[in-house]
Every structure is written in C-alpha cells, then in structure tokens.
Image (cartoon, rainbow, N blue to C red; front, side, top):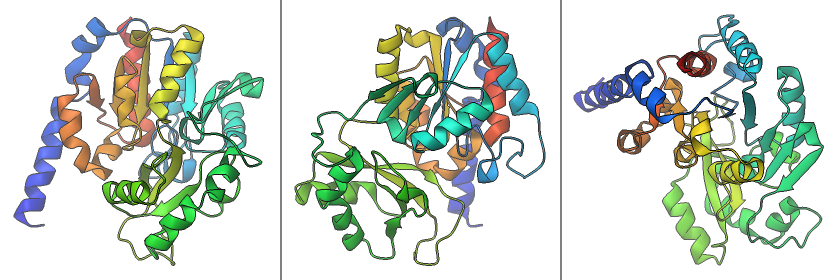
Amino acid sequence: MNGIQREGEERIHELARRKSVGRNIEWLRENLAPVRVIYTDLDGTMVGPLGCFFRDSEWEPTLRPARALLAAFARNVDIMLVSGRHKAQLRETARILGCVNYVAELGTELVYNLGQEVIMNIGDLEVTGDSVYDTIVETGVVDLLLDEYPRRLEMHAPWSDVRDCTPLLRGLVDLREARALLDAGGFGGFELVDNGVIPRKSPTLDVPVTRAYHLVPLGVSKEQAVRRDREHRGIRREETVAVGDAEADLPFAHETGAFFMVRNGLDNNPHLAGEIKDLPNVFVTGERMGLGWAEVVETLLGLF
C-alpha cells in the first residue's frame, strides 16, 4: 500500500468514526420522531452476500438482522423495500421477509399490500410501447450506450431479461461522461444511475470493478419515490429514515429524517466521502451489510 492509499483509508476511517451511529445518538434523538417507516435497499444493505438474509459480510451465519426485523414489526414500523429489482422479484422477497410495501426498479413503481395497489412513477415519460421498458429501449438510447462502451458496459443478464420499466446494465463508466453522451445524442430525458458494486465478474467485460446501472426517466429516483410515498401516505419526513450502500441511495438523505450508509457502502464508494461529510443527517454504521442494517434498526427502536 502506498502513502496515498494509506492516507485515503485513514480519511475514510476517520469519517466513519465521526459519522458513526453511536457518536450521533443525541442528534438522532433530537431530530427524529418515533420512526414509522424505514426505507431500505436490499442487496449489500439488508441482505448479505448473494442476497442471503442469514449471512454476514464474511459469510458467517447470523440471526441478528432477522431479530431486528421482528422487533421492528412488533413496534409497527413499516420496512419498505426500495430496490432496483423487478416488482415480481420484490414481491417474493417481501413475502418471505413479512414486508408488504416496496418500491421497484429504482423508484419507477410504488407497490402497496403486495401488489393490491401500484403507483407508476415515471416522470414525464410518454409510454408509446407495450411497457415503460419497451418505450425506453425503442428510443435507441440503450444501443447508444452499448455501442459507445464496448466491453465496458453490457446488459445485466439474466436479470435484465425481466423488466417492466428500467433497462438494467452492468460494467464501469464515468457517469458525467455518460450523461454528456446522452445529452449530445438527444436523450437528455434519461439518466444512467449507479446502483452499486456487483460482486460477480463478467468474462465479457474489461473492467476492474463491476457496477450495476439503471437507465431511468430523468427525475425518477429512489429518493423521489420516497417523497411521493410520504405524500401518498401522509408521513412526515422526521418519521422516516433510510438505509443503503450505493451512490443511488445517498440522496435518500434529502427526503428522510436520517440516512444510514452501511460501512461496506462507504468502503466501495470512497468518492462519496465529501458528500457524506457535509450532510448533517447522514451516518455510517460500524457493521457491514445485514449487521449494519440491524445496527440501525436496533438503534432506532432504542431511541423512543
């Protein structure tokens, strides 16, 4: 490890210490009301490696997240899943976990009571195809991205094969460069959103790290969906928190009373340190993945 890398790790460690949940208990008690909704990302946040709820980041068995989930249910706290996953995938996950409300495909669909009510959330996009997904693909915007970034970007198969709203890709690109490409190509009505690191490697990509990307209508995001949900259900901001691990999750801080980044999220996205430092309602868990998620729930339930 060279000096620059060591200095960077020391800065991340110091930020995590200063923004730790334990050091900011009084802020949380003073600025939050009893929490009614916890908006939570799934992969890399609530669940551990390969989407397992009963394994920690080191693949060790654990019941701590399950106990935290049951404790939240006992206090009538709604655990609302917010994910890039398709709503059919989320429905099965929600059924197993005992949750009933979720936000699918990075904010494009708000689903209540396991699908009894679905609110589409696609901004100003005019649907001209058989689905939102088909409408986006038929514009040619996906082809533009794939042609521009050969062996750096590809469809996130097989999960990209079953989508209703957002094309799902994987690879590694500069988002500012990609946004400029979309604008120049006449696709300014769309945005490529980074939804975090994928642990699997693709043999058809030449990238050092693989990240998941969603192509969404401009203005549609996880945090925008949270705002719409709060308005729909009449929930005050201070009655909500969010937990996540990716760049797409950090803006939750603007729509909830507090946002918690699980520690692996900070480690995988050190470029977010400057933003995290300057946001007063953003905190970093000491634990990773599901244990970090449990740390948040346990802390919140102990506040009031």
